[in-house]
Amino acid sequence: MHARALVKTSWTDPVAVANAHAATPFCLALLSGGEGPAARWSYLALDPDAHLILAPDDGRDPFTALADLLGPPLPRLADGPPFQGGVAGLCGYGLGARAEGLRLAAADYPDAVFARYGAVLAFDHQTREVIAVGRDQQEAERALSWLAAPAGVIAKGPLSLDFSSRDGESHERAVADVVGRIGAGEIFQANIARVWRGNLAENAQPFDLAARLYSQSPAPFAAYFRFENRALVSNSPERFLQVEGRRIESRPIKGTAPRSPDPAEDARLAQALLASAKDRAENLMIVDLMRNDLSRVCLPGEVETPELFRIETFANVHHLVSTVRGTLVEGAGPADVLRAAFPPGSITGAPKVQAMKVIDALEPARGPFFGSIFWAGFDGAMDANVLIRTTAFTRTPDGWTLEARAGGGIVADSDPVAERAETEAKIDAVRSALLGDLNDS
Image (cartoon, rainbow, N blue to C red; front, side, top):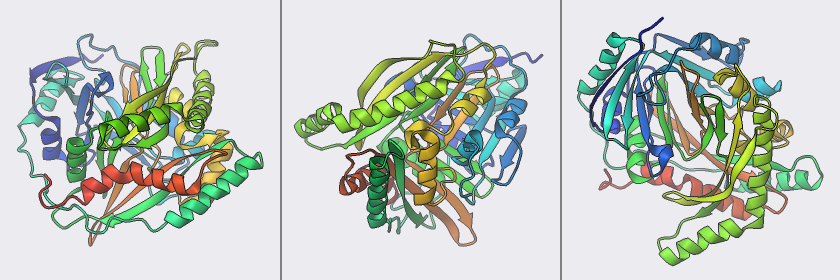
């Protein structure tokens, strides 16, 4: 039995600390920003004692592998942060095919990257203190030592000179195709995305984008993850799943409106989103899907929807957000929860399996996009985002290439031109951060 330990110290900026370690293999930084309780905690995890990378052709069951890495539950420290060490990393979109028994096009990207972290640094934005947690005192002290690393320099000026998309017109055709399928009764909704690509400037690193997004458009479920010759930067506003004890919660986003610099017009846009029959119907379909998914691992009659159609406002967009909660059956752990609900309903559609088949026919293989960056604690707690507003980097002999995607839920009355415009609004924060002028910091 491990003697769990924690050490508290004074506040340090989590972005600066993460930047000092950003090139370290399996560096994981969860950089919560913005307002509200979901943005309270940031984390840094380094030096895992075990890891697992599952390629698309690896036949091992990823959810069993996750449970095996976690091992038997450990007690939590009552005065510690939500994440006190455990397994964290990437669940790629391809895990959804495994969970649902589908054969989808394989991406040139791992389906899963799991790393087991015995120690973490937790940054409490509310109390303004840093907590080092370990499975014993030595591990807690090791995590505390990460604060002493000298901070790196965040690149100024443009991070990319060629970030662009060439599939606007084909996206409109894909939207029209989905509308036709809905009219024919094949599906009720599908989430269709398009692709942006580019290259990092010579003086830039992937973490520079994470730092700039944190400064310019903070999001509660932002993340940075580095492994092998790859890095992921997510500026996600969306929680996929949270587990605390036997309580589980999902907060799907469906419905988006752009922001306006004029306060009166901005308020009008938010209210129009709230009143939109199309967006409310789109949101409600995914709420019903998530209720069904969670019922697989929850007590009968214990899945509820305490909040529907809440407006949440971010730097570039307003979103329509709902909440689904349930009580887990005895013994259900993070691996069981992910198996039951993956991939997120908000980025697939309804019915989920058929929507995934439609997406596979209309999009390049998604790889990491619309999967999840997650942590699963040794104590059974868990939190997982939805990998939207995400940029994937691959290091080549010529430098870092990058790819990002943005999409939206398509329903019967979706307009292809309007849906294309919605993707532009959603990608705007990433575009602005990558293409910032020489005065940007």
